[in-house]
Length: 310
Length: 275
Image 1 (tube, chains in turn brown, yellow):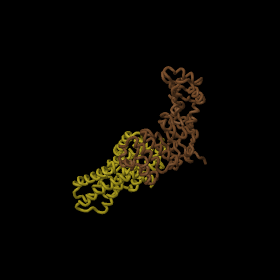
Image 2: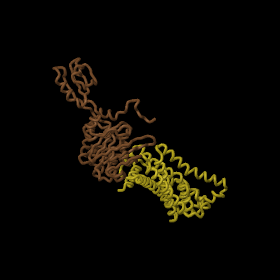
Image 3: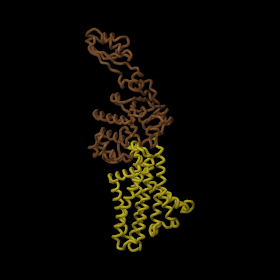
């Protein structure tokens, strides 16, 4: 018996002539927090629907929580769809009670979860008066009903302000500590950087990369950027000082941004720091961010190379 | 609690909240009362009880109204949720699709049964106790039969509306299809049948298979059940000649088939649907 909560084996999904997901293989071990990145229409939502058993793969096989999809698996899965909307009553509390009954979750959990997502007071208000952030929080609450072992969250943090986002990730951290596996898709890259175990990048239905951020940074071979503040007119000198491997990415009178490979980074830094007095006033080292990595793997290919189906 | 019952309960609460239940009940009660009070005036002394007269006029009007109410109740059931975006979330819960179809049908069935029973029933009580002569117990039974048959007719059209709801992709299209289906089954079918009967002089193939043609339409099955099957009513309606030897069990079975058949179709279509 494998420990993988989600296992996809060469899964392909076609809608007519449109291929939404192509030859996707992915295994998510228990307790992992996996982020799913990709442009709109990259196949993230389709993949989640297949994991939920709402749509069947055209070819390939998948198993979720050790079962081949189906109703039994869904009992232990929590799902928060993109642009969530609710039914089952006019107020937030009624709606959550309806979903709790559907899932066979204890009634007391409704109050607990409303408290946890900060809707205890707003629970008596009509759902249609909710802001996007409140709906999103109610959506998270319903996903947590019945103590799921797997959470599928489709763009969960859109519409949340930074404070709520912190709170949101705090809840997810608690879930992860309890051994819950989390699959989350997002466009907000900076917030995923420090919180996820692995990052999967999809492009046009294909999985183009899946690794830790560190692994992705190495695989991408992206340069480390060194921002150097120099006296007026010293940009060219600083660039030369950094050594052979450095390239000038951007420069103006008082500062220059150099790109060096990961391997050359320390050499370049030593040389810059050891320069004559006043030639370098300040240094900032910027490792490739998730955004750079994402642009490298997931960015749409430049015009002319696009394999858009006609 | 089983998921079907949870969904049925949700449908009933929604029906109460958006005044569907109250509206339908009031309409049916008003219709029945109006027919009873206005329609019983010219009867005079023909030996037919007022309640029986009401049964005839009520059944020939509810044949138009009940299918309309039922279709309006059901056409939105799945397509509306798909459009509002609540269907995806519900399907992600541990329930199978037949439980959704069954739950929604049960909820609508409860709303419609309540409206019919209370609406017609209150009118019957008002007529019964305001009439100079109390209706016989046979008349009461006949009226109860009318309520039962009317519920059957309503449920058949709820089932048909459910099929429309799982087949069509947009809510507005579903509404249009529902109206067309209503027009065809309730109005055009009979007109076509009548025209064909006149053209063939009631002879030949059509004349011999007429009962089958009537049973093939839920509205006509209802007509057979209410007008011909109850004692006395058929004499007034003039239908006795058509179906003199047709036992009441056949229109009942036809109505049941019109409930079960469309539900099975709706479930099959819904189960295969890709999201």
